[in-house]
Image (cartoon, rainbow, N blue to C red; front, side):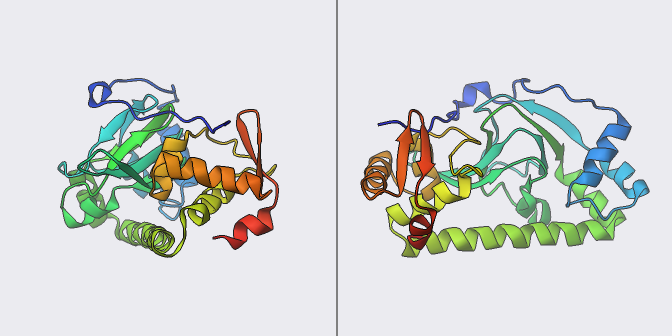
Length: 246
């Protein structure tokens, strides 16, 4: 059966290698990018200069892990380009994706605020550039720039809403319902899954199940006329019926 192809997270052996995009790193460019991110949009030029002066840029290759759950706080991360995922791993090695991050998204605010360990792991899903502020830098900036605290609170609130929705889906929706929501969320305007290429293993990790269940749900959706396979792409045929499952 055709499937959506994805980049798999590689082993720990390739952590912290320098791969990825080459972006201008001038001070002016950093200020411009920071101003375009909702997280920092309300800050003054002077405050943005202070923020830019404390960031560290890192380039990650596809599948590269930057930090792991239960490690000491790795700081605040901001996606500049590419894409990444936040995930937890069970004792048996099963992965649950908690969030997908795109340019402008931030993550790891929880340990930055409470001083605890990383609550989840972070990996790039394609060539990705991230900006990082370590915990000491963020703590200093939060005291210097009170408005930054409000931005962090808003980001945490948004993340809480996402997790509440995920708990709802895991609790009340069938695997087919969760898969329907996943397909709708990642479909482009042409009703195709084209922004990323996913294996059934990756889809399973995102919706909290196993590959075999995803394969069965996809076959059922195709049989019922809600989706169809076009070579290596999944096309949504009946969006309304798909949405009714979520």
